[in-house]
Image (cartoon, rainbow, N blue to C red):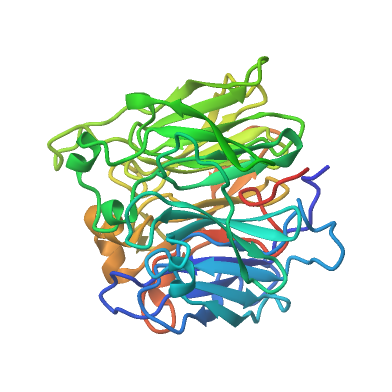
Length: 438
């Protein structure tokens, strides 16, 4: 089974410093996850970026489960984009605890294809890497996809061949080559979300409410699933790891719903809202506070769905053995606006559960607490002063429960060079949110 795996001993963690009071350079942190190590749960190395202002956000590998079988390819290089700078860094992680930058692709090379703001990195079959690009060279719509070579990281050009009725609003994507499909989601134009969140932008239709179905082999837009108010700001998309399935979930951030999408018998796609998070009253808000679902993941065996409610301050665990009928099994509250636990080890929880990563055996769930620099500063300004945090819960899949590990804490406020915002997490051996099987 895919869930049979050695315990993770190292994590790579994005750590931007954009918008911090210290105004330093971003870095990729190396966190020790080996409980037998003297430096367990510590930041043991940092790969500092050469420029300020990148806003590292999401990253991925040059090769993953859909391409590792290809001769000569290995999961060795991290592809690390800057969201704001549109600069892409290539990090050699052959030595897992001593990674090094070996190449930098400057933003002007991306602008040549009228694209900016790189986000999701997936390796794909055929020796290629495809990155979702959220804007054009001016930070407006349309965005697109940019394709790179896996060996020398040269740019091939745009991936999409026929955009059809797609208007270019973009964010995350997942693909399943066995079923000839790619599914993409929507956030907004970079110039809309860069300054922070403004409700007037939602009312003006500047944020997304749809996902898009693409023909994988033809690189052609096929269908739009428009959610309307039930699916405002659909962010992370997670399809079944089982390559025989044609279904998945997307978390609609602002609407705070989990949407199940699936292929129907006639080959078109449909959707249902399967989980709804209720907004809550707060003394400091003049409107009910949405939970703001920011990250979701499926365990490698597709049995459990986890997601984070960043404003409310909790993360949920659902049994999704029947994907159309999720069943809540456990919740952890930690930080946020409503969490009943606001400190661990005497340290105030700055922010709330946000980016998630699950061990490959499904027994340890890790998370960080920063979302995006301007949004952090708006909703949890203490992160800008003191940095964010990384936590862990022990998961018991046979019992359908999880338990916060109060002995584990990585404080990115203590990072060399000053506080940073811990964000996305990756394992050297691949993980739940990047690996695709054919």
